[in-house]
Image (cartoon, one colour):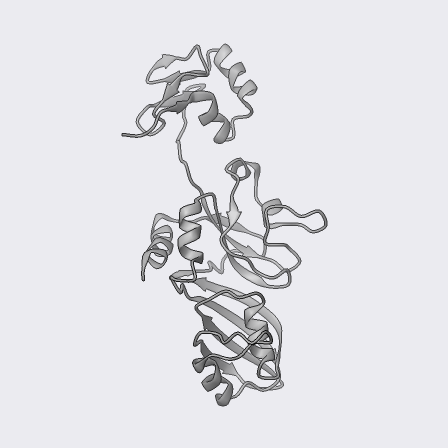
Length: 244
């Protein structure tokens, strides 16, 4: 049985304004629950089983939102920042009311897949070091990336602080003065991809995250664009987050 919640809280969380705003809707007779006009905003209802209407339109209740964003460079993977634009600044008010946060982080100068949600349990499962959820990156690297680098990465490399990374899969697309690669890692240390290449004497000059677990970036999304995840995509994240 679902827990009942106050009507004004439910509508406020769904973006219909403050509780004061909802009180105005109630006063004007604009809200119906199960076919009856509501006269008290503090009325407790089950938002999943009750039919809720505002001005004749059915309100679809949901507790969580899940967004995929193609993060651009120059944007911070945070909910707020005093100096720089954040990924939250890029989304519309209809999603901001849910107070979403990023699942993990990308560096300011890194592009690609970001997931935003207000589902703390899902975020914890995906980010837990015990789960070893894979993250796929595309990178352009200054210097010739070699088969020896590939072997070293597969064994784990020593970072500048002495930490040895878990084995990673390095795929060389093009090896030249500027090499192009894919790298799959199973952890998320600070600046990890850049530091891994620095450990073999090379510098990453462009980095883009392509996938988290089975969830791949929708490349029809332009930089800074986003959309809701489909149910199938949410299940892909759930599956990876729940796997051992």
